[in-house]
Figure (cartoon, rainbow, N blue to C red):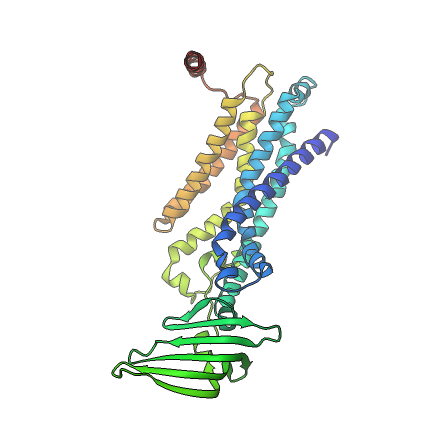
Length: 388
């Protein structure tokens, strides 16, 4: 790789990393806000919150990486065109194909990154997220130990704790149990503690009163106690059985599935569509770079507008990705539709390489350019009159 190729590669890949990190951070924040209840209603720390929500980052990178690469390539080509670098290289005898190979190197690196994420990292993150959320939401102890709040640990069971001391002792405990339609039980205790052992999880209440109100009775029955144990194990549900969805399967599990897999038996169409979507993922970065360079890589003077070429590149990429999305969605029920995404990517890469190899400049027809110019002038004139 020569000095020019290294310069183009470093500029493109550096811009790709900046765009990728920026977009991922913004989208991650919006997604993470949906699980803010982990800190509020579930009583988890900020580290647990960041750890759990951070597990979706590989999936975000998988979706954003091809788009970030497109933006990086467009930025680099626009910068080189503005600085007349492309024109100088072309005048020096450097063909567009040699220039394209530098961008293709960046595309191959991104494609390898997408392959690793699609095959292992994204499913692994989603699996860990499901396991962690199941564990957190099944943890009764972390749910009820929230001083100053009325917390419903199950339908009909509400608990309130006034204070939790540093030694773990709970002060001012209120427990209301309405699960039995014929009887309502209310417990008030001065203090208590949580005990978790081999026999289960118990809330040990001390120095309090149990009030039982029968539906058929007007007055409640009240019993004062020195020590009372309330079993919390019944709310934990025992060990949680986790079943991973299709998106949480590794690539090799999709390629060589267990014939007895319940998802494969019940949903063979979505299973097959997910496999082809994973196989297509590494091809999109390469296709996006080919399309972007086909529109923007030709040498142009500073007086020639690149706006429409940029619109054409974005439009071509958008149409290609839309075809892939439609093919995956409808391919779940119509297997023949899965072929459409392969045909579209092959046509985009093949057509783009032909344009790059032959040096064809993709520009809109002259009549369209004249119409756009006339429309722009009319709008400018009307705006100028309206501002007077």
